[in-house]
Image 1 (cartoon, rainbow, N blue to C red):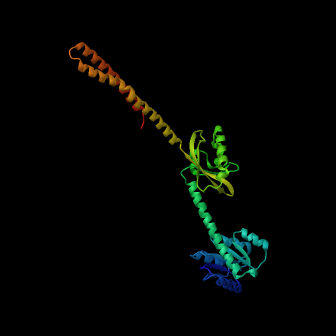
Image 2 (tube, rainbow, N blue to C red):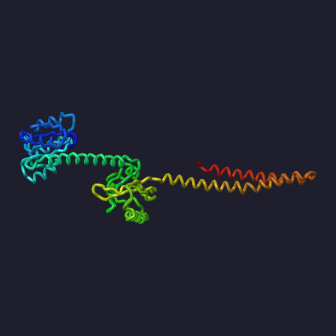
Image 3 (tube, helix red, strand yellow):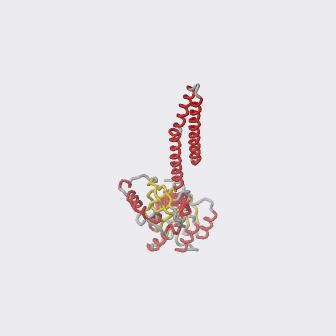
Length: 338
């Protein structure tokens, strides 16, 4: 026994409906059964009924519609509710065709039992739930992929052909979506970078990589070529995916060119600061030491004015030298951008 299901039974034969109803009560604890005797009534019920049905049991031969036309119109209005066809006609070929038209199952009335009907209903409901979960998962992937602010693409591992690219990739690289799909991953590389790319592709196919967890793996920093010819440096992360039945890889390409340029500028500034520090600790010390020594000398000379004058001249000379060094340091410091 299981919980309540809401089921629409579309059947014009009272005896067949009574049998289906009996089977439903035999296997389902408290089914909510709605009966329609023709297509017109079923259509009205489906359009007016607020609560969705869990499944629809459809007789294939109704007074106002039958066969393939009935299936097509029912599928069009049932809003993804699973439809199980119950028929007295043992037409195997049509049974196969009806499944391709969108019904969930096809059961001959002469083979119908409470258990077979119950199994078919459960299968149809679970299949619908699985499809809904898959659609939700695909929607989440679509949102994650296409709304990401970072360039992302998917490529076929066998052919290296691009299978998809998001809006950020189109914007950052300058190729439109159709151009991306006509390219391979080699097209974003300079000639000298191709061997590096091939080496990276081999690495991700190594046996040791096969059992990695489903998280994006950092592959390294590589150079890419934009449509305009600009060369950028990108941080690549990647993971295996199945894309429309193909073995593929999804790539996140984070453009770090500006960050690397900034780091390079900082390194250059640090070199200038080191030079300034060396000047301060070595070049400044020489005239300063002379001045300090001369000041001590001038204190010891009491009666010889000419000696004092010479020492004062040396002090002035050292002071001017120190002033020039300080100006040089000031000029170098002004060139350092913070």
